[in-house]
Image 1 (cartoon, one colour):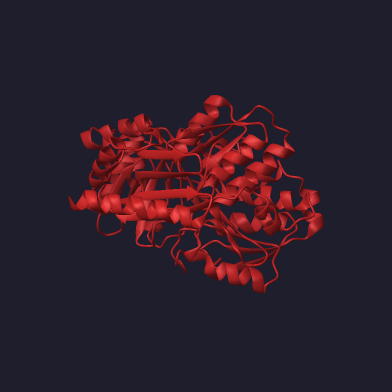
Image 2 (tube, rainbow, N blue to C red):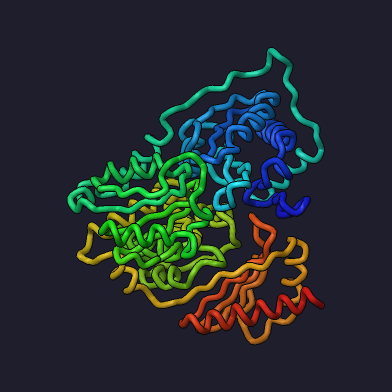
Length: 458
């Protein structure tokens, strides 16, 4: 389930994304609402959105489609994506729609579709929904079959209370941590502040006005979080946290202002959770693009690693199938099965703060003690079809490497690896490389970027 239409409309396992007013129009959104309402057989649907300026327009369009198909809509307002997925379960809904383009720039918006367990539709379920969408045979209820929209206001309370239930709250409170927080003016502001204040933290907020006017490019990476790095150091914070606009991903900054990143957010959360819960012979599930740091951490705890295709639903379903102890994606997507089978920045914050409270080291020292790997991420503009053709060619000529073709192409050597895949969320070919040194990782990026360019040129 992945295709690009009109250059800027992405239909994939991560939902339907487009540029508002161009490819993502009210007509398209309403039709998707009709299709999802038909797919759910006119059931109960949770609807939430992030803070994007276009969110209100998109919400009313999707509500029109859902209501016309006879759905009972539970509107939970502006919330983080993990808050919404928890509420789907809490309210015993048949599914949910979250209106958020996650890390995409402000001109984008998206619809993300979830089933009754609060997990994304998987590839087959997504195809079933799209078949309904393209077929156009929607349920259309008469005037007396339409149901009112119910407003639900306590979503963030439920989320915070559930996270607090797995933490040693008093131990964290006793440390009185000073925490710098950058939510990119997104939907994570309210729930993040509530959690941190419930843990006795003194919060130093930056970019925490939930108006959807993003102060920097939303993806929580090194380039985009330089404000937070400086702010963390200047305010004397013990740690800095950043979320993307829908707060399903978290990045960490050390007390020195050093950017520790998204990959180490997952590694540190996993390391502490596995130790705290004394997990032995368990399973940790991560995706193909996740750092070997998390793999090393899991193995050191006596767990085996399972890798899946990139995409939250792929990790979540494998975790559920294997009753995994922990999991996630290296983009900062922490998945703790004690809370929910979904990425959750709020859980990541809580676990990392308890890790700090449980030891006498700084976050910088904890990160420095992790196994040393250097990852570089790159991307080239390319339509999905072109990306797949390049990858198909490379699969036929892998060289002397262990080959995995479950998701694009991953090539592994003893001391390095490279992963090439078409993005689910942008019309780009992603190239991710990791090695024991930065220069070795960059050499892999340079090598495969040139190979791709030569193939495209040819």
